[in-house]
Image (tube, rainbow, N blue to C red):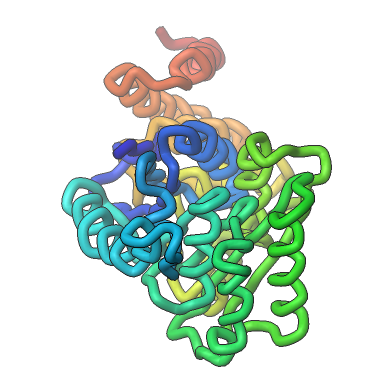
Length: 344
């Protein structure tokens, strides 16, 4: 098992993070974890804990929900694997880390077939599923044949599903096209699904772009101010409160959200909004050198230089203690503020 924690994990001792389970972790974990960190830094998606798990020698056994005679005793154990993920893996993760009750699962090829099964069958606790080049041809495309039954199921919670295909002719494409036809003919109840095709990618290269696009599709509209507009703290709180209906989970604002929206407001001339947002941020994440440094910037733009230096000093102390990636930038602002105030 591999685990990637958000860079902000130590900024509080209470904040809980959604979890993304990356199947076939030995090959898929690193790039998925990197995409999550990059996209969440700019509030395009939520910050998440990424967990990689692998079953390298028994993929057919655990990623298929039907048993074939040719693979007798070596296929059809998807139900058992789901039980392992939900009752053992996620429980173990929850005992060691602060996890929220919102989970995403990503799979590729056979594991993409498995995540497709989870998305449609309603037989899991996962809130969102990613299926990159799923092996929908398995057992004569039985998952598509069963879709009529699954389509009538009323999901207990809103579910997100993204499926994609690379340049893969033959049974991969025919299986994928058949599933899209079924979904378009009779959309599933309470499942928000998205699809994409990547004609310039191969079966092996597509997980890199596929997972990044999947995350952006699942969390489409997540960034409250993607353009040049800004929002007040009150408007931001309402924006994310409304998201609870769509996702079936109420996401509290994280470090990077406070940081992105606070700095943006300050730089776009709404310095009072920026200060209010960032002050709320450091109130909730007292150990965040990122937020304290950004608050110093907002105070400086408000010409509150004494407050700015006080916030900068807190940021610098935290950055040194935590060996922060942003130490050099924090030192630079602290030095500049001291020069303006004529202090040492």
